[in-house]
Image (cartoon, rainbow, N blue to C red; front, side):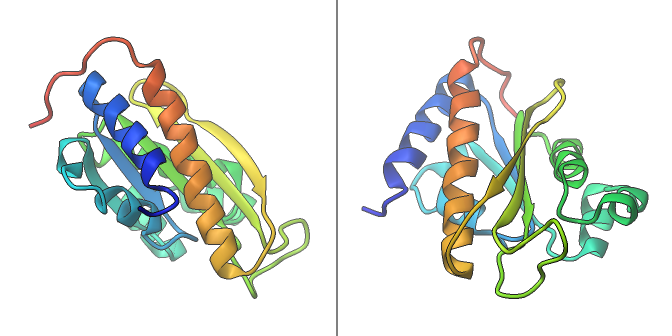
Length: 170
């Protein structure tokens, strides 16, 4: 059993019980959140799709992130994380989205955004995304693993608050 498997199992149960589907939009994790979710057999019951939008161009093209947001705030920002989560919901039939953008290192740091700076956004369809800044430590692998754990925890908490079943996705 992987260290994250109990968390993914709990998330899966909460999403199945509500009938909700999950979409991911990932930059600094490069698809690790989606990979962690889909390691669990039966994940097609609750995992709809994942977007790996590592470049700014991919964020713009795949998720409709406004280039002006990136120009004004940088790709590693609350505004871009929020737009990524919104775009993931708009480009999927999922009910819940999680998005991450950050500086995993060892390079890429800028003033005010050191290595380990990650913005996480999560949202339920029809509600504004919530955002959180993470200030993580360790090497590139550590930052990415910690980001996956935080993202799954936030989505699990949201999924556990869902009360009414969602209609089946088509």
